[in-house]
Image (cartoon, rainbow, N blue to C red; front, side, top):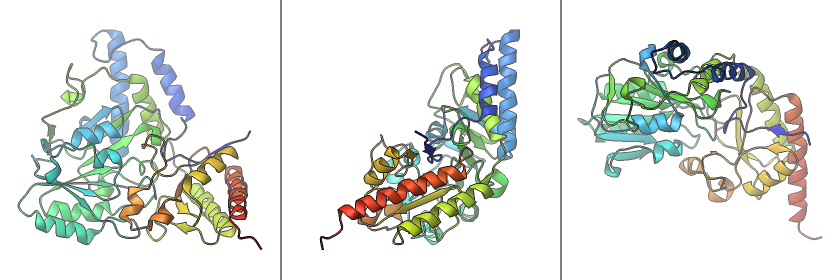
Length: 382
């Protein structure tokens, strides 16, 4: 069966350039911490990749720490015992209401030092709510955690505006740039954040590689989670995964094709409205990533759509891929105050470098068949 993979926000297929770089690295033998020729060759690969990621986010290479992914990176940095840009330790963690689970539950702040901020109905961080929170915590050192773009709705968050407010209050901003990286400009100069987390597999690199990046060299985390040989300047012990790291760098260097994906997304949404005119798109009133569409058809639950589309050869998602495979109500849509009955039907379509017009055509055929079948089943008898 021909299949269409439309779940790039969960993971993006490995790019050929990344695969080739990884195979070359796997053919090498050497621990990047060893001083012999083989070790130095491995170290050169790692440091070359560090320079590439640093250029990608516009910082100094010494400000890049490789991790197993963005979840580890964010768990590492979201601690009151951090010092970022000369600020710290921290008293308060503010979290935007639509953040990924690794931010909502992966921080190391005491629960009474954490405040979740509201989103607007369009899915944006409420800047007025942020200002009010900063006023309430005046005189305390504040860290704000906010996404560059939401993983479920694709809504692009006002990170630069939020950073201006936070910096004026003497705080710092940690940005989850996972979904935005490679899709919109999301480096330090654009976002104004103090720390960024990115992940290889959302760029077309391998799963299991990521980075925590700082905008300034003045940073330190007193309670690093992985301790041992002192790798990554003491922030992340353990032998570096050279193959994954070089694959990460190659994926970050790939050219984006967001205008093409935006055209495919718009066509897909037009097909959805033609087939189900009552469909509701979430985040459509805010700036969105060109590749992402999150919507619901009233009266059709997400698990029905997911299973039916899968049987027809189309892979989509109900939201975040980090919920043990369960279809449950989205906390993002809840924060946007979407009615529960409608939120239960939400699915996410996310496009990427592998997708073509035929993938959109296949989705349209499968979606139309599913909607007609379900609505015919529930049509009142004459």
